[in-house]
Image 1 (cartoon, rainbow, N blue to C red):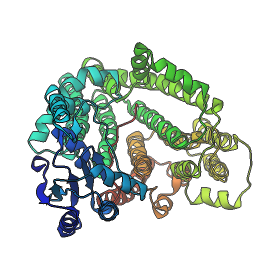
Image 2: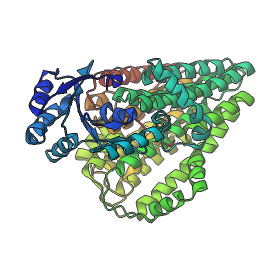
Image 3: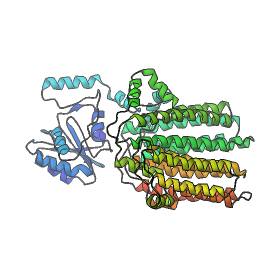
Image 4: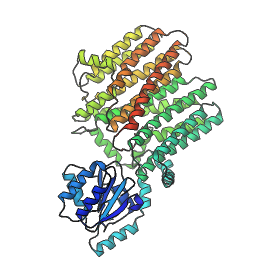
Length: 590
């Protein structure tokens, strides 16, 4: 217990255990442990030190964080007939051990009274309370037969990961995670090191030299090793936090998109302008992510799931080689970054972006087709929570909200995605066909805003309503890309890259707040930055007004800076002060 950071105190009976509990500061974790406990240290670590759960138990031990302390005291009083309890102390932790305790009965009582008690899967780890010598000998024999450090290292690796990560990174990155743990490094520090390494890689790519490209590829791979290490360190040392999950997910996007910018800068030094390709790759990748997020949120708590497509997918998972093939063809982060790193070192930025666009387009078609089939063949009723999450993911601003509240309403099972698609199609078609600076683009943006409001006028509970947020993302991002590319104004595409980056950060931040159980960003933030339809209209107006040389670039840059400032300040304020429960983001396949 002391090796886990607890101070140990002994209670003679349940009355003394309750008294010792009362003496522990209210902001500390406590634990009750049967003195006859036999088991691995890592079994106790899993049961007593995981910060994600208010209360947790393994056979012979029970823990309660501050928010579950009162439930533990009530359970002690309820089970007073079972004499004995044990409670841990220390910096942030306290423990007391007695000679006659039944932590399992206390855990059952807490469950019955409405305080869930987490019971981690121990696998081959031993955690037992022997009642006689034969059972004690058997427990000790099991203890000696299993190396808990080997189990701890194996469990540090994510259960479901990509082929490249599983076979080329995790076999050694887990040992880097252990090295970091033994030196007191935190997952957030490793995450930050991964970000800095990727930024240096982007800087190396920006040199535009072959040596810089080779260094960039190697550094990007090392950044990915650190990216795997931070999650493994979190699992190895049970250092989970809301902040850590947010940093890990957000920095992944920042690293990849900064690297795209570095490649574009390097290509420009060699006389090749690939900013449109870089922005296109970012738009495609961001839209892939929002498809993942939107589909998952729509079906997070769907009931009566009976999709034949899902059943077929489950059957394919029983065939080993199909599992790895299906994980690879969606081009998850490991495979994607490995491809980028190798192609950077041996080819040119243009080829890197061509490969990204082709590979990610195929992956997007594959995953989206599968999800469409699942949605059309399943019989499920989506909940109010799912509809609320989809509404938040749409990022509807004041214009869309006014239309939704006061405008015409069109019913129908597929009305929302169809209306959204009509508005998005008209907007992108106008951007492609109208001359740059045409006033017609403004009318197209107004029409898009009206369609956007009509699409969200009803709760998004239809079978295909999860398509609405991705359609809005594609409409906004592609419009910015097309207008900047057709402006033929120096610096317009890099400015557009910055604007899409700032807006994408806001959209990713919205996703991670929802997934962390903290709700969407405040409405004042969405209104301040205009919502997707408001920003699209502003960009259309800027294109029509600022047609002079460099004026459009300055306007886009100013808009990007304003959006970035507002969303970053609010996002950092929220995550630093968030009281959300600790979580760990296992990551998305793409």
